[in-house]
Image (cartoon, rainbow, N blue to C red; front, side, top):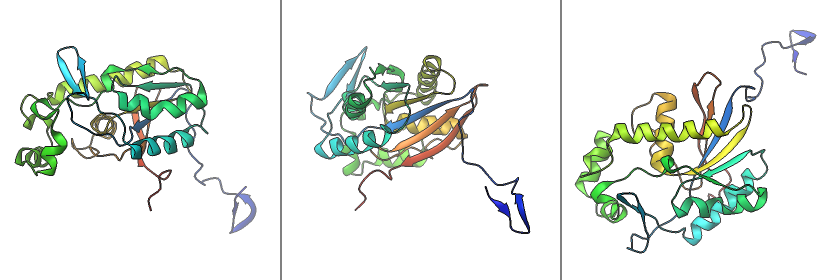
Amino acid sequence: MHEDSQNPGRPLVHAQKRFRLPGDAREIVLVRHGSAGGEKVDNRLLFGELTLTDPPLWPEGEAQATAVCERLGRESIARIFITPLQRTRQTASRLLELTGIEPIVIPELREVHLGEFEHSFYARAAARDPLLQRMMAEESWEVLPLAEPMDEFSARVRVGIDKIVELLDAGARAIAFAHAGTIGEVCRQATGSRRFAFVAPENASITRLVVHGDGRWALRAFNDVSHLDCG
């Protein structure tokens, strides 16, 4: 018990307490997948009419995945969610072993589709493609030819979070392994920020979203990488 120094024996009634999840709320822990790469034809996934970039984790990404899963394995977890892309399942694999929970695929939380840049994004970024620089300056995916419209991306991400809420009991926590653009969009919607304010969470980072019983979203943490070796 903390005491009022001016009045010994009297408890501090205005001392701030640590956060506790309200009984009617749900916590969704968003984890960006570990480092992955390779824009080869073999690293692609047919998804309806789209072809998605689907590379596996690098060895560095596997180490990141182990670190984040070991940390999350100490928390109470009700459900685990992944996307159709293999890098999220691979990142989740250690946590699936620790918990025995069968993952649920949420297609709506897949990465934003980058149109003509979908399979060459990192090569173009390394070459300082002017369209990518303009995309960042204007904070709009739609700068890229045939990229997913911003409104459509926003709406499907919302649907993905709503699906998790429907499958999660009040007062429970879920882990959702997802992607940088997706996590950034969730944070944007939760805070009302500008469009790209949260666009670049690090690999294997943790972001915490609270969805209250009345439907309000609250961002509790963003881009927590304290479990990773920063040396």
